[in-house]
Length: 223
Image (cartoon, rainbow, N blue to C red; front, top):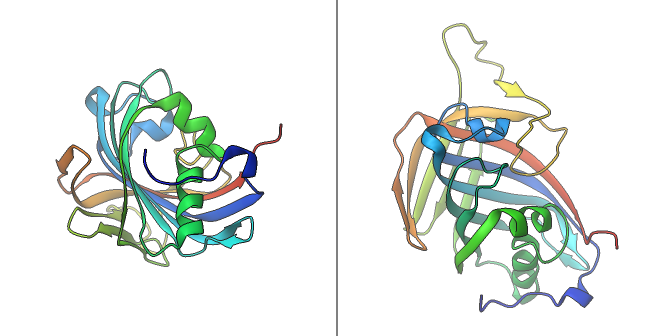
């Protein structure tokens, strides 16, 4: 990885909170969030993060966005390894860019420190790019784009017996991709899932898994 990061001995206290969404090749609802093997035992997935508030020391982090592309075979929570690549928000200044890389590649403590070393086999690339993450306020739909490389979106699940004013949600997920959380998992289905970057190329059909989970992380970890 050639991008700058914050030296470990200089990691300041930090906190970021925001919203995460995914689009993947699994059937909906995604079994990975239940800590089960993915549909067909293989998953092609996009994760998108929008930071709504937070700081990395004195560096403000609100408004920044991150997108991860990955695939894996087997149960993510029972020995499977991710190969992945990262897009980081090109609007960030030098300090914000270093903070994003440090947090999301697991070098600054917090949830990603627990996740990346134990679940990621290879980081295939890191790029700074123009990222858009749109999340409708009632969680009816969500969408992420990265220049001409990514277009993915989802819509909340509904059916003939559901109340259209409410969302299908669950709590205490055993395989939450954003770490332990008291927040709701809002279940949806993919509308679009196209990406081509870092050696990954997908065009996931409509109707596959997609979901939304808030995240709230702190670091660095206590010694």
